[in-house]
Image (tube, rainbow, N blue to C red):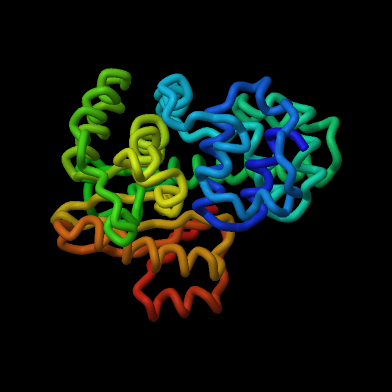
Length: 316
């Protein structure tokens, strides 16, 4: 086995915390380290059972090394990206270990996801890369339409709303304190933004909301420090959830919105849970509403959504 087998094994468990640990390991390691022999006497199946400390131990990684931790603070960019290792982790999660290994061997796993890099690989592998890329494209497309059409509450002028993406939820339920250093992170990010983007970000800071970019680039390092040294480890923060879209309306109201190609059971469950978590994390909002934005609907599920006060936004 090679060292990249450790994060692949963690991904097969289906555990959100272990998947977060897998990503952290891949981001901490140098590219050449992925391909070094794994000095481990157990089997691939045994790797799944390792705890966080055990994973770092078999990899020979000091998780407190400043150099390693620095790699978790990637350059801040105003976009959500996937990497070439994401299809490998997805394939491993589906039990397709050899296909996952082929990705790690054939492309640079640390680079931004580029589907063209996968065209020489097996059909299933190429399709997985395309699926991940299309998911990103879909969410970009839906977010753009939300803003262009002034949804979900067109009666409110566009300039009175704040549109946010991938907002972190679950802090309160998981017992993770996200406020220490909040202003420090905010100031660091603000300096790197354009004037237009900075206005939205300043409103986000005022509301006390943290998005996925902010979390990954600025907070993951500090939160993921082992518990013995004042952090939470990689796996607990990995169980935090990300709300596709949050639209802050007048009257201190917020819309929690999930985006899908077609209305489905998953979207209904997600928006229900995420709104619940959002309310726990942000009790100062006077009203929290639920919505699902999609390009195709399902009349049977729409009726259930209506009963549960979930607004359906169907866009063509």
